[in-house]
Length: 594
Image 1 (cartoon, rainbow, N blue to C red):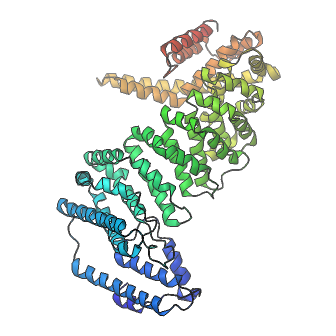
Image 2 (cartoon, one colour):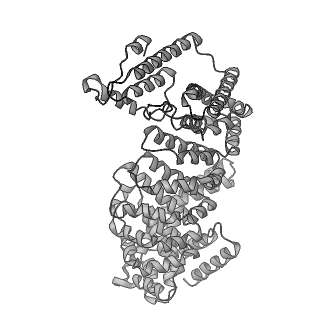
Image 3 (cartoon, rainbow, N blue to C red):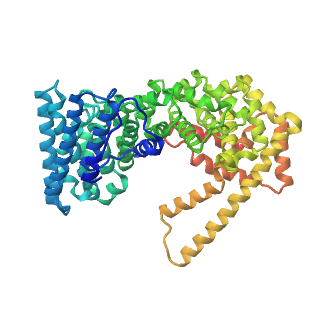
């Protein structure tokens, strides 16, 4: 907007609504689409403040108000003229100009702080310094294009100053004048969040490893997460700019966690975990911030027993179950909501890797909820099966296995074992993934169940002329063929590598093993384990049926034994040596009696 337009500008007065033909509504819509990024340049901000003053006046306004508006207009023009004189052309961005910019920021920050202390009850006195401070923060965005100069931010102490501004008292830099209505302009803390989000952008951090390390170290030393959480606590998500501020804050956490995964524990302990759980369970319409919260929560819990324990202690299992219960009878209404649902399921699965959380899941009636989801045949069914798998696996899952039988879970799981649902593709899950989870749940129950519950499980295999054994053997040959084909291809590649004189190192062998797993090796191992378990159950009918089908289809007991030996060798990652040895011996005893 040029000077002439500013002089001719007339604000709307009183309660009179702007006419549609004058573009009043359009103007508001245009403002609301501004997003989280701050507008650069003094004129736009001053003009917004001037317009807000006009809208906020009651009736026609008195002489004093008119004089104040005229004075504001004069100030705007003076600023514009000063800018034109002082900044004829943009300076090239180099180390010298960045140093100058940082020092200007430090001066303006100090001046604003000084005036706030001197005139705490007189906002007019420090308003100008607040606007200047906001300006220089906007200018500092250019530093994000030069990560190799990040060390200057640390050396000149501006990281400490920026973090200090996260607890800046001003909730809105344009609402400090008496008689001004709350303005949509962002406050200083949000401007700092926006800057930090750009500085920590993961692509930028990866451009200069050295600069990134220095910046992240300084931020963590200044307890950046604790300050960000405190700032989020006071933001009102009903105000768009503040909602954007929360989104950008979560982006900072994601950027830092991706660059340095080890900080997740520290971040969770500095109040982030508590804030995320509180935000997720807040009764608000679904939005981008709730989706982002679910994503950050899943990231914090990934491969981290410390954060899993922290979530359990904060009753986070109950929070996750309450949020997921919505999808028991209703599908997510949008793709974004479906993504949030999957994030919450992933977070729950991560938590269940910790034994203590299995008990919390059991007490919170998580098994009943997952069982209902399996019966309701909604989108949540696939993920519910994955959660059951995590809850029941290993010796820590014994209580959950017994409870699952008590709540009539066998009636739910075996129809899914007998037939893979056709709707799987809609949820993005593969047939192999479904069959892996079902077989893993049944294998866990065979391992963990005792007395009456075990008898009920084994009786399921004898029902309807052993139809479940027939299905088991059908899956056995299906996955055996897939794995044998993969093995054949891998052997061909190995021979070719040997012929060329290449060395088969551990990395290549691991890659080959992963390819065998992708082909279905793990599912085949689970199926063979179920075959061996039911054959050793003491029910001759089951053992006879397994061997009968093996002979009919040209199968081999040797192949089953070889598969089980390989399974026994790979069992118990992360477990104690005593457990591994005991489990291997138990499996090999079953194999010898097969």
